Image (cartoon, rainbow, N blue to C red; front, side, top):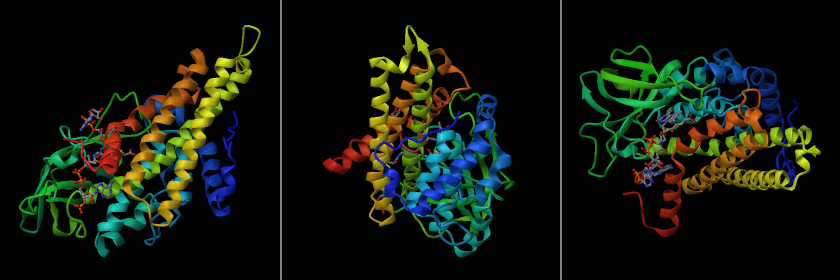
Length: 395
Ligand code: TGC
Ligand code: FAD
């Protein structure tokens, strides 16, 4: 079935030719290489690792980073690329988000020149895969409470702790891990947090794959264990201290999600519209019934609003005026919107809506994860709530 991209407000006109070209080339790649295999990967809980190098060739790994062989795409072009990937599957977009925003970005923004030279050119080509370890079994929404520790030892640092729910963990060549460095804080919570690059194979570092997920199945998730794991002195990210390190990375990734989920919603709408026009019940196609039309119109309305929100956010990012709280509002709105569209589309498809052959059910299950990771919907509510009232409601 050919995909028709919803563009009810002619938003294409607001894009540059280069942005449209990048989006269209990712769309062609997704249609040729990913869509034919995604349902099988989802069913078998596998990731198409054979395509990682092609992600690199298309500029999908560290897309908006400059230098070190990275593509240096504009923020809107990067957003459009994420939209096309997530139109296929949130797990595919997740792979690229983690690689670019959570593993490459901290090295690019906080790393030493030697770290950048060592990792970034290989990571952007997909020759090295990274993951990002912040969440712990007992500290999800409140990562500042983390108990993973680092202490200075002769020649390096010893890391001890556990990181849970780590995307790309099972296939990662390196992990960017956040830990509390003994004696480094200034008394403010989280001021002792530091980032470390831990290479696969380092003694005391192991990864266990998390099995049996019913969401984001075409994405590999792992638990990272650090037991007396000694990394060399040059493994620490030297140019950041405290929670603004990991939170700064999350801002990058949340930006990509705000765009990506629009793609998932567009896919759901497209499936629902085509299905409704063809499926005959009682006397005519179900698209002719008022209740079905209302569902389709609600989707068009909400997707169009989300497209405009993402585009404005992108232009703010390009102008270097973006605020993390604006990203939170967009992540919150667009993920909720996409989840609602996926559920509605699944409903319009009736029984077929639960089959792997149709994307809405898969998107719906994936979006339950997207609703929770990178800050739950509640956490983004509280972030914006704090911004507009000046009062924190976290504790
Ligand atoms: P708070 O005291 O507010 O701030 C500490 C320092 O950080 C700065 N900051 C930020 N900087 C950049 N971007 C942001 N979004 C920032 N938010 C805060 C802040 O200015 C401050 O700087 P400074 O210089 O004063 O030290 O921090 P807090 O400890 O009170 O945290 C507040 C809270 C709840 C918002 C934060 O903990 C939070 O966002 N929690 C949600 C956790 C989360 O999102 N985890 C995501 C884990 S990674 C993941 O899910 C990957 S999924 C990957 C995929 O597959 O796509
Ligand atoms: P909790 O924090 O325990 O939240 C449970 C519920 O309580 C939620 O509804 C939440 O909104 C609510 N809640 C919590 N605090 C408050 C409050 N103050 N007020 C009101 N309600 C509150 N993490 C990484 O570090 N790296 C990764 O690569 C990564 N990938 C992931 C991949 C998947 C598939 C999943 C599912 C998660 C991933 N995560 C990753 C972890 C993710 O970021 C966390 O799951 C998320 O931050 C929520 O933490 P939690 O699951 O511990 O839920």
